[in-house]
Structures are given as structure tokens and as C-alpha cells.
Length: 192
Image (cartoon, rainbow, N blue to C red; front, side, top):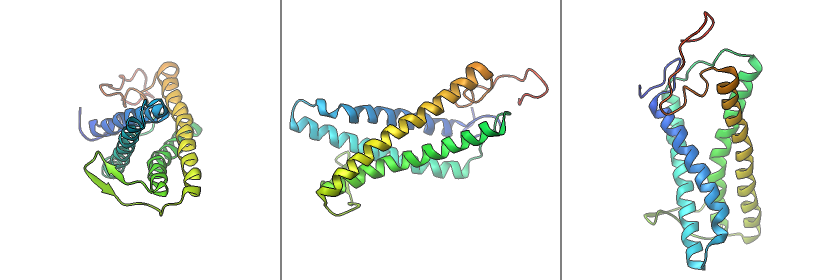
């Protein structure tokens, strides 16, 4: 498998970014929803610190992914109706916006609360805003709603990939699976 993408297959670097970010976002989102289950205030503080560091990691991976995407090629769209191709591009665009906005909104909330933002206890990041407890209530709501919006868009993304795989029997999902290979063409119109 090539590091770089081709006209028909995503490369291993693009696949790595896709799957590691998917796992980190979903795992950190679930972790964030469970933080109220902490048994002590100190445990909760530790869990919040871990949640923030994972969120910052997602943000860093997103920036690296964008840089790689700018330097890498993109496989051609699978043949299909134009509206499906436009919808796929729109969903990807919204996913990218939400993936960027979610950790930034968490950073904003943390800044408004006046807490230091440490990355895995290694170094502090600057605040994005001055302490403001009233605005912090809005910021945490924005952060949570962005996560739920991301889940909805992810459902559309995963649902479409499964539809392509199960019903259309095309390469949309196969070419992004970690060890997936595009199927061989069965007719003149198929892409090799």
C-alpha cells in the first residue's frame, strides 16, 4: 500500500489520519459525556485534563491532516448521481468544520473559565479569551451542541459509506478501510 493516494485508492497516510481521528473524536466525546461519573473532585480534574489534552491532539492531527491533504492527491469520485457526489463533498466539508470547531470551542470554554490549559502536563497553551463566567455557560453549551451535531453528521457519513458498500457494491468504503483494496472491475463502466 502506498503512502500517497492514487486516483482510485486513499494512501496509508490519509487512512491513518481518517481512522485515528475518528477513534480519538468518538472516544473523547464518550469520555467527555462520562466525566460526571468521577468519584472525587481530584479524579474529575484529572479526567478533564485528559479530555482537554486529547481534544488538543485531535486539533493538532486535524492541522496535520489538512497539510497532508493539500500535498496529497484525492481519489476520483466513484461514478454515481451528481447529487450524491455533491452531498458527499458537503458532508465532508461540514465534518471538517465541526472537527475544527469542537476542540476550539473547548479551548474557548476553558479560557473563559480561567483555567490553565496544559497539554498532557508538558506545557501550557495561551488563553483564547479573558475569564468570563457568564459567557462560559454559553461556551460549554456551544461545545456540547457541536459534539451532538458532529454525531449527526457522522451518522450520515457512516450511513452513506455503508449504503455504498452494501447496496451499491462500489469502492467508496473499500478504498478507505485500513487494509481495503478496491474491487476489480466487473463491467466496462467500473473504475479499476
